[in-house]
Length: 281
Image 1 (cartoon, rainbow, N blue to C red):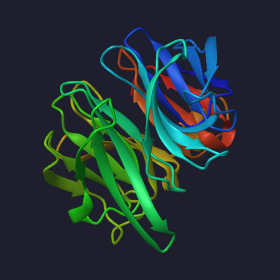
Image 2: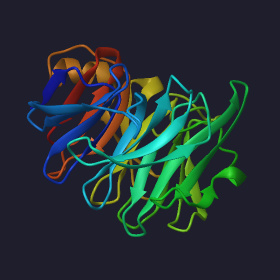
Image 3: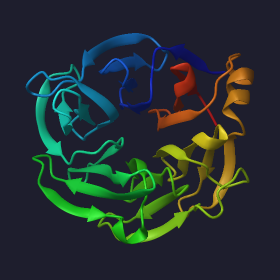
């Protein structure tokens, strides 16, 4: 009915070949698994100067290379680094220094790298999405007018629309491919545990039908919405219950979500340092 294995951490991306790439923050590396949970390989997340970087998020581009965002401890710098699948550094560019974690996605149609950014202190934060070319040239910023607070993770759907989960505003922002605001669902006022409400949303992805899947971290569940933001269902009404019943384990707090090549839901649960695969939902 499902699979689980230990050792994975926060965020992940699944390739068309069925390899799962996981950002292992605590060990400053990327781990690679099959969809059956078999460990394949790993490589350290370093910059061109071999300085170790703590990865916040990982994604794949149209050529099958990885983009990883994170920060180094030695010089307290933030970077976006491109690796091949074996972990060789291809290029990097520097990002504004911030203590807040970032998310990353790729618009393969335009070959743009989209990176979330949060600046400021805890009670006075400001968020936005930065759109770069692979050489680090800034194309545009997205989200300032909507009052983003702490944009957490980001994805690009099949139509090129940009979807961003905001951890503190308890919502998802949706923009078109040019960065024009379309709509949002969930907000700080209506935060809660009701159908369609979000509490500290984290990972976000879309399936082939355009449905939006959100790791509702604060409510220990995963929710599905249609492409207009209308609530469809809980994929898991409580991830601790899901894992206990489906996988015979006890876990909580879903962090990252991704869709496999055959429609599998891949989910990381950070409190248990595990990755779970749900074949159908």
